[in-house]
Amino acid sequence: MPDRGLLFSPAFRFALFYGAFYLGFGAYLPYMPVWFESRGLSPEMIGAAAAAGMAGRVLAAPLGALWSDRAPRRRDSVIAFAAAALLLLLAFEPARSPWLIVALAGLAGAAVTGVIPLIDAFAMGEARRVGFAFGPARAIGSATFIVGNIGCGALISRLGGEAALAWAAAGAGAALLAAIALPAGRREAGAPRPSAFSGASALLGGGLPLAFAASALIQGAHGFYYGFSAVAWRAQGVSGEAVGALWATGVAAEIVFFALSTRVFRRWSPAGLMALGGAASLARWGLLALSPPLVLLFPLQCLHAFTFAATYLGFLRHASAHAPERFAATAQAINSALSGGLVLAGATLASGIAYGAFGAGGFALMAAPAGVGLGLALVLARRGAKAS
Image (cartoon, rainbow, N blue to C red; front, side, top):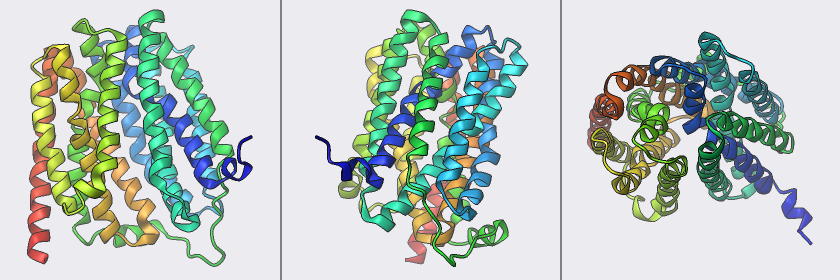
């Protein structure tokens, strides 16, 4: 008989939400472009649809974080975003006009990706307050993301691109139910409510603008990968199951990195980690542009541990050291809006044009933002070395 205390613990309820959300997100992120393709969208329109979703995050993430920071219960914003995500994904089904699909992609992307900084900030705050480990709860999400990658890829191979939307919507429904079961996250009585202006002024010091820019450019360089890797690899004859396995390999490498980061990268500076991510990006995107065979795609996917995870961890460490604690969620939301919104949207829009012209060779375009991000991370590292 299960332990009722465990089932109702904050750790379990956050793990439940992460598991449900990332099960659907594991289909949404790599395979919505396949669904767009199944509806007859051109590569340019697929790029526009993917970019619209990322652009929606630019407004959704900061506004959602401000709402969450000021609301009496943090759970409310998560429920609202989860409900909006489900309704907007369901609205795709009857859509036939390419421009209507692009518009829906912008709104759905704002809701789906906008919940990520909200739940991360909520979970980390509750972990500190209650005393549970954030890492294992978040790792459940990484594990179910892999299940979504592989499972939806297999389903697409059998049923076609329409299966991507069905899986993503089912995951969104499960996430909404899990959001309702989250702890309330009530604000402490008398706690000050931060304003947008005070938050902006507090986040201009400590090299944070440079860290925002470096992180956004290196993470934004994933635009072609997120928007067109599944389409490009399937065009090369890679099966849906293999595409899912490739994405799962990247996430598995990310999990291993986070598991070993405390021991292996404990002494690395935040800027050093971001520079590592930038350098790995140059190698990853340059080599993927050469359309290597499937046997080489798997080891190249392991570089995701550095291009994504090292960059992500580097920014989190820098923000933790330099952003005031009461604005931690705001700092994370701004980073999300930039790296997962503005820059990623621009890179994805450009990727649609690049894929239409060069196919998988368009991966090479992503070396440009990654290279600039690497340079900024090195400048930040040099400033940190001088300060110490």
